[in-house]
Image 1: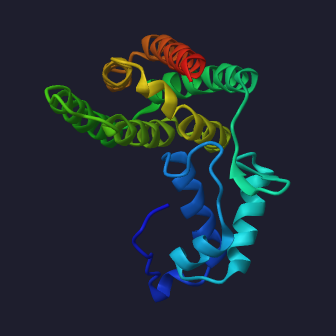
Image 2 (image 1 turned 135 degrees about the vertical axis):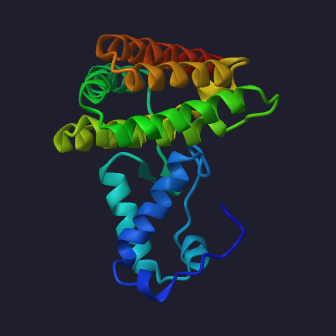
Length: 225
């Protein structure tokens, strides 16, 4: 759990339950809370400077989405998906995300392509460094954000959001395999380039390859645990 207390600004206090929900969800997605780790209401309330009511509401919402679960004599813990569930999620995500990439390549406006050009340059710079642990997540978030906007399909974006959160939350393990993080960055760069160049079919194909590689890395790392 983060050690530094969170200070909420006055203008942020209105939808406090939503703020707490997003905070905890992102902590899970970013791996701050690991699979199987307990989330203690009292400690989280102190950390976020709120009462326990919005904490309970946030945890209930996260449980309904499968991010946490309540266990007897243990309380609320971060969920751990089964291998079968991971494979199912990757399969669905591959279909939807490859479609989003293809649509983005076809519909991207000049502003979107410029954002991708900057991201590609940043990835190239990062790849020259010897230590880039966790940097791929930054590019993952950036690319997905641009792609969803460029695809111009709100319904598709909505469907992708939930699945992408599952993947980000539960596949950190795959990046622990030697060489996988750098390989994932290469794949993200190639994806961004394909969309930037308007190559829809290539973007679609590269997306499926990337997600298949990510799935294999996760499953291999899971077996090593």
